Length: 215
Image (tube, rainbow, N blue to C red; front, side):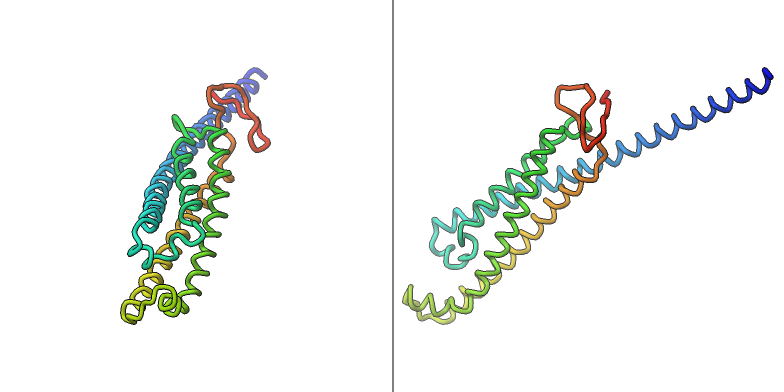
């Protein structure tokens, strides 16, 4: 009987050791995945900040320099480069401060998630405005001739071509912004709850319906 009990005890201990090993491997894989996701978010947010800053700066230059304005009419149409670009810059900055010491900060991640969704909507609005501006380019020669008394057709067609190229580049840029924002949303929605923590807290927290003891 003693031999049977000893064998059973050893079997349970062996199973427990294997479970601990599996848990350690799982935690290691989770930490590696989390670190990779944080690097992705960091790189993508930095890229968004740089590109959106260039867009806003280009819009400001367009307002101040008429020669630039004529060739980039779609940039400032309805001011989309300012409100969409500004929102994207804010989203990028929030993404850089949403994680700390290898884990996402719950409050900052939630704020970043909200801004990422808002930026996606704003960018889609910007895409709509750009597509609308592209439809107006067919009437640009007539409008330039009437409003600016410009009859130099090579110059007018150059204006049309430059505006079309600018609009297409902007459309591609907005698509990139939208993809990055949606990628951030997907990351936050698919990460397990232990990937988040309350800032300045080591108490169990409630995230996505699970209680996690952070150590």
